[in-house]
Length: 273
Ligand code: ATP
Ligand code: MG
Image 1 (cartoon, helix red, strand yellow):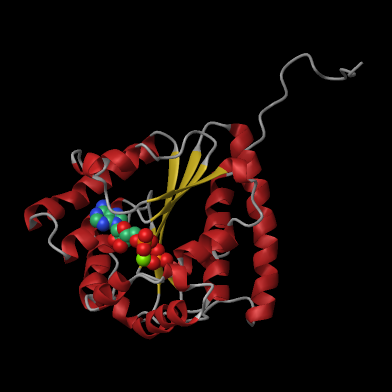
Image 2: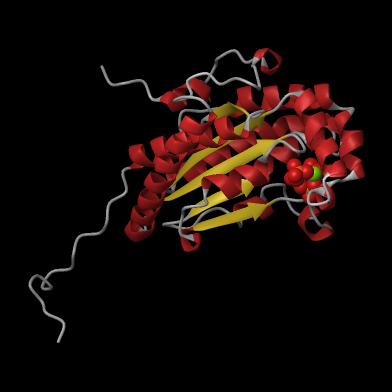
């Protein structure tokens, strides 16, 4: 029996039941030890990720897309900083999705997203993504219900296309509790180094917490697939979250098993003069 990958713990299987409210955002389940011990394991995973990324880049024929979603102050920025700290910046690209410009809004919702999809050999991180078009857009009725409801099928088709053309897709919800969001927003007010991140609009958005949870739950259930799985990662503890996302990425890349290309014929034994 193959050992059950620890990353399976957070994966949402197709047709599985999902109750976000029942998932403990402060969970430490499966962690290799306490905070210090887990951080040591994360350091090893970072080195492993660096090696796997180098292979993917050298192989140059497939790509990896990490979709990161979460509530305001959910830890997307911190996760990216921590998880990719040991990786060659040339092989990783972060695409951040803000509210669409009028030019972007004049196109279909996937237009700006598709343009950011990873090229062969690349690892691309979506900091927010096309999922905003069934999350914030749904919560605030930015388009008619019939339109956002139709988008789940468009998202599934889009991700199937990327998959069929050589992109491995991993989608992660950083799941924080409402109380943890309160703490983090308060810290943005109180800490001069974090104040620039404070956005008054986040306080208004917080009032829609339950609507967002419902929108996330529906989006995950409707779009998790074996070729584009959703993972719900408990996000209240940064050290646990970082280890979890690192574990998911390393496991995914190990399954891809990227290889350095074969040496071209005729260079065996060649000496550089
Ligand atoms: P943090 O979590 O640290 O606050 P952030 O991701 O919220 O960072 P911001 O610049 O504060 O970064 O917010 C980006 C905003 O863009 C979010 O409020 C998000 O809902 C909004 N957004 C992204 N994509 C879309 C979209 N397609 N339609 C409408 N709003 C969108
Ligand atoms: Mg924000």
